[in-house]
Amino acid sequence: MRRELSPQAEDIGSDIIPREFNVQFVAGAFMAVLVWWLDGGTELPLCEADAIFRSLTEKRRD
Image (cartoon, rainbow, N blue to C red):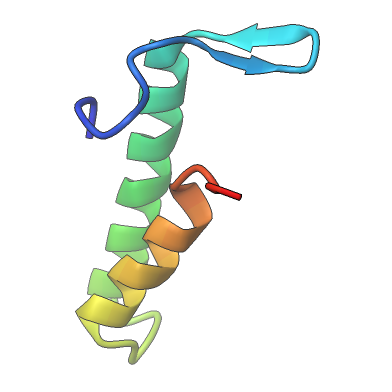
């Protein structure tokens, strides 16, 4: 995951978000979704859950 995230700190307006903060945030979200999926909180196929997670966490390239 660390390799996929930007090596630079994110600049959001006047705030700078350290890269490691971003890594921890995405990893925590991933673990929460994974536990939910494994516990049977959904009938989503794994590939769909992965696609949704990636769409929510990947930087938009407009």
